[in-house]
Amino acid sequence: MKKVVRDGKVAVLYSPKYGAGWYSWNRDRIDMLFDPGLVDLVLEGNAEKIFVYVTLRWPDAYTGGLEDLTIEWIPEGSRFIIEEHDGAETVKLQKTIKWIRA
Image 1: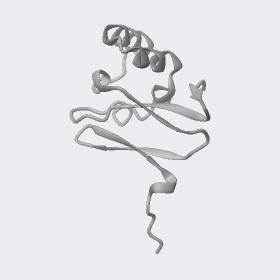
Image 2: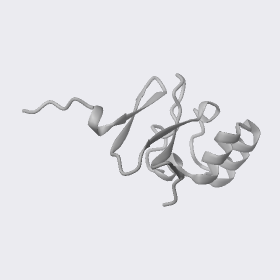
Image 3: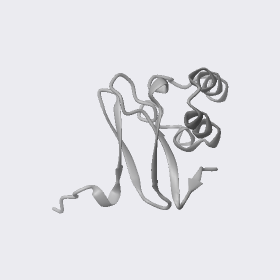
Image 4: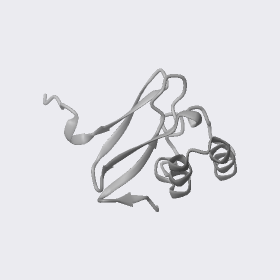
């Protein structure tokens, strides 16, 4: 899977605003997190092009959260999860999660 990497960090797409999640509502499509074409369009900031690209690339995907797509740059090779609450997604690196041991 191709990813955008700059200065040792990978671009991860997510939707931080309340309403609908981007990846959390399309969990079977991990490529939606990293798609280089979409990353470029989000950086460009052209909402119309983003909508056209997404509907052509993933015609049956849920597109809620599309208008709020944001990029989180995380260190290459890092483990992370996307958490969602009422549609608002956050990117959490494994090293920042406080695990509880039984």
